[in-house]
Every structure is written in C-alpha cells, then in structure tokens.
Amino acid sequence: MTDDLREDLLGLERRGWDALCDGSAADFYGQTMTPGGVMVLANGAVMSRDEVVTALAGSPAWASYELADVMVVPVGTDGAAMVYTGRAWREAGGEPFVCAMTSTYVRTPDGWRLALYTQTPVG
Image 1 (cartoon, rainbow, N blue to C red):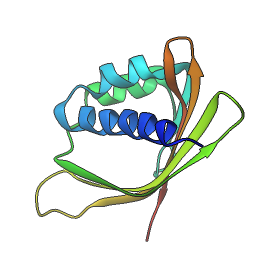
Image 2 (image 1 turned 180 degrees about the vertical axis):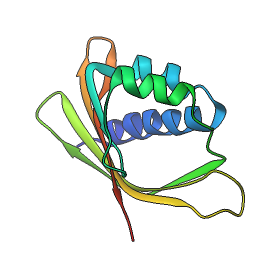
Image 3 (image 1 turned 45 degrees about the vertical axis):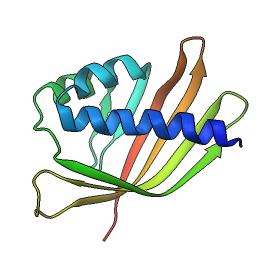
C-alpha cells in the first residue's frame, strides 16, 4: 500500500462526510457509488445506490464528524477497503453516533468508486 492510496481514499472518505454535513450527500453518493453499490447500515438496513440517494435526500445533515484509527487494506490490484472508527454528531454537545466503518472502493477509468460500505456499532 502506498501513502498516495491512503491519502486518495481518506480524501474521498472525508468528502463523503463533508457532504453528509453540508446537505449534498445524495449527489455525492449518487456519483461516487458503483451502479451495483450497497450500504449495510448499523440498524441492519441493506440499501442499493438508488435507495441510498433517496434516503440521503431526505435526511438531516450531520453537524460534525471524526475519523480515527484509519487503515487501508488492499483488495487485489484495483480495490481497497478503508476501515476506521467514525464518530458523528447531529448537534453540538449531543451524543455521538459511533461505528466501526468500512468503505470498499474499486478503481474505475473514472477514478475510485464506492462498492460497499458497512457500519458496525461500537458499544
């Protein structure tokens, strides 16, 4: 794994979280997810790209987030999984949403695309 790969994927992951905070997440994930991409959420929901876009269009924005313990695991020659602990707050001073998160990306001619995202609650 190269430092460039880690920085590229971390930058993409942060752009996704920034979009979740500024209200542009539906557009971001609609463009970034692969056509067959899936999200598996902490509540057990399994959502296709179209379902994610629809859900994000009506979701409240996050106020802030933190990413910690970031690791990148190469998956073949054109894939990589970014694993980290994510903390996000809907409002300042509120309780954080905390999960172990994995974003699995594939390299396409148009750049890195999100194929699978999972959340596992951290107690």
